[in-house]
Image (tube, rainbow, N blue to C red; front, side):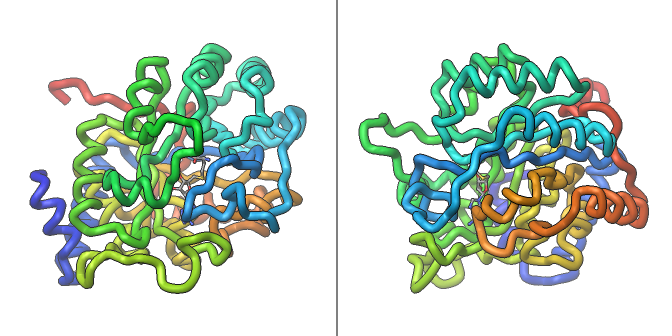
Length: 349
Ligand code: SAH
């Protein structure tokens, strides 16, 4: 698909044509990655953060957030729960929290790798290369770092560089992760105030150029206690602002599947939040092949408030799991077995 075609699809308003796009992506998903939906248990291990991202409810200046940091034993208990549900991967996610030291997290990773068969994915923000290397050495398999937007001006506005740190955008960190031997994940929010349709088309083309293994995309959800949350956020010109809708999210998932057929693409919690009834299913029918059930202990879950009314904050993991299996079955899909690494088709295949 050419870049101008990506842009044309993002601008498409005819509902029947949009559904054709979704179906085309679903067909490519079925052919290339099959019916398996890989389940990744999400453990939100800390909500401390030193950054001031304009979109995120966990930003350092958010004084009303009660902060928590899980112990290694709590993380191991959640990982064992992932094993009991048959999940192949745990994802440890946190704010950019230097209270989680390089050595402490390396120790936790080593324990998970020694005591369970799980693949380990990290989503810990922009940590120094020494930390990323130590965690890889300890056994971590994958790293998620969304670049959020390829529009450099918008990125600087929503994702300020801390004083004293050299500006480096997240796109520049991805090759470092690759060099260290991680499977590399990135992605963007959809409908961030100021995000233009043309820049979103460039984001999708960039996924292909970066040959990403995992691509996470969800709608922007305004958090009232953030600069982008209330009042009149700066939006792009009329007709250019990307809508933060489930429909636009599904089209972006579909285009992502078409340009990156082999990638692991989650149907995200943010999509399920804006469409609680059909969100997860709808994403899975538009190209997605991954779901990330939340295994964060109930007493911490509501505190990981990157955006408000996050889907599933009161769900019991067992109940969510059973419901998810039923939903997959109804869609003619099945839970994936094993770690669910990114597949690579041979040149002939
Ligand atoms: N500290 C880690 C993990 C952040 S949470 C990091 O920065 O990488 C993971 C993702 O949630 C972010 O990359 C962002 O794309 C998304 N997110 C954050 N705030 C959001 C909001 N208000 N609406 C929708 N998605 C949001």
